[in-house]
Amino acid sequence: MAHVYGIDAAGEALLAGPVAKAKAVAAAHAEDVDGKGRFPDEGMRALAEQGLWGLCVEKAAGGLGAGPNLFAGVVEELATACASTAMVYVMHVTAGQMVAASKTVADRGALLAEMAAGRHLTTLAFSEKGSRSHFWAPVSALVEQGAGFSTSAQKSWVTSAAKADSYVSSAQAPRAASPLESALYLVRKGSRGVRIAGPWHGLGLRGNDSAPVSFEGLAVGKGDLLTEPGKGADGMLQVVLPWFAVGTSSMAHGLCRAAVAATAGHLGAAGFEHAGTKLRDLPTLRARLAQMSIRTEASRSLLGRTVASMAAPTAETPLLVLQARAAALEAALEVTDLGMRACGGAAFSRHLPLERVFRDARAGWIMAPTVDHLQEFVGRALVGLPLFG
Ligand SMILES: Cc1cc2nc3c(=O)[nH]c(=O)nc-3n(C[C@H](O)[C@H](O)[C@H](O)COP(=O)(O)OP(=O)(O)OC[C@H]3O[C@@H](n4cnc5c(N)ncnc54)[C@H](O)[C@@H]3O)c2cc1C
Image 1: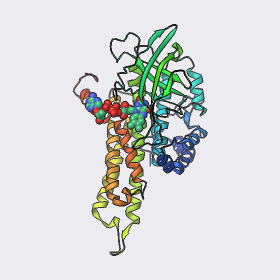
Image 2 (image 1 turned 180 degrees about the vertical axis):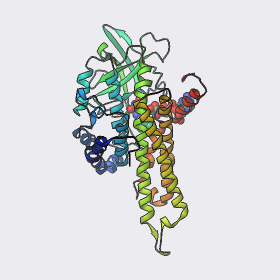
Image 3 (image 1 turned 45 degrees about the vertical axis):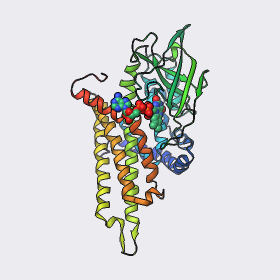
Image 4 (image 1 turned 90 degrees about the vertical axis):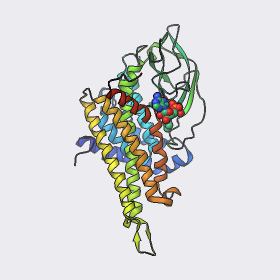
């Protein structure tokens, strides 16, 4: 049967070989990563060894040149095993696409080659203490200084904060008339003025090290700019948002699939000895499991349509992207909640992996654009209003 994301035979072979190997490593460490709230070093190293840090990097730079559909397939598989690994990977691929799209960063080719070689991990540093989930409106600003710029910022969440080799970051352009006149720039590991400003201790995705980071008098060279000053919103909305939406949607689907599998397994295995029946003999529980599967497959189909549209964009593509992310994140909440209810105390007491999946699934919903924002954007688009009012 054709893959729901339209993945071809070569892509299927990648999923069955290198991805499956990296996934097995991530799975073996998932409980420990979650329990200790530690970075998924083993899973990320396995992905690097399998050449997957360069999945969507152009072939000329040593990558595999994959598009959004294979990205979705890889992330979904990873998320069935360890969502923390999947999230770190989503941020890396998404931020890497901004580097790939940049016409201004000085060492674009070298950066992409390092990513493809598994030596450079990147991430996003958009959210700020001052503008919270409104990532499109940074309150920090670039100030002209000598031949370049300097900036100070309080970034509120940076996935892979202590591990990343670079951050794709945002600030208002010099003399911006509004926060929407922004610029994107690259912050390199070890830059003076960059400080991890607190610990990461989340409810879910406990391994992804999404700590706050502060920049104080950080020097930003002209060659660090990822967009022209004033063009940051274009980069955020036209490059970062679609890749982030695909990555987080497929991560949600991996969590849904894990919840369906764990629930089906438990309903078939656990039973009532006094009655000689299994949990699966209860129609209520079968109905919950059916709802879980129906919701998962409906959302996967919408993402499949979305990634196909991204490969041959039309006027409806941006709307599909927003809708796919909203649908997937809502599905993840509902499906994991149904799984918790279907499996009862066995799930609540952590005898099943469902409880971790349930917690991990809560993160995507509040990552910006949150589902509230997505609904607002979709609604505005449908009635012909501009995205930002
Ligand atoms: C696990 C995790 C990892 C993350 N990693 C990164 C990262 O690597 N890089 C990065 O830049 N950010 C990251 N974030 C931050 C994320 O993108 C959001 O900025 C953050 O979750 C917003 O939280 P907040 O409390 O500031 O939300 P708030 O802005 O305070 O929102 C609170 C509530 O209000 C709602 N709301 C806000 N504005 C509107 C509106 N206009 N209309 C309707 N409802 C609205 C929201 O939906 C939410 O329900 C991460 C977040 C999480 C949870």
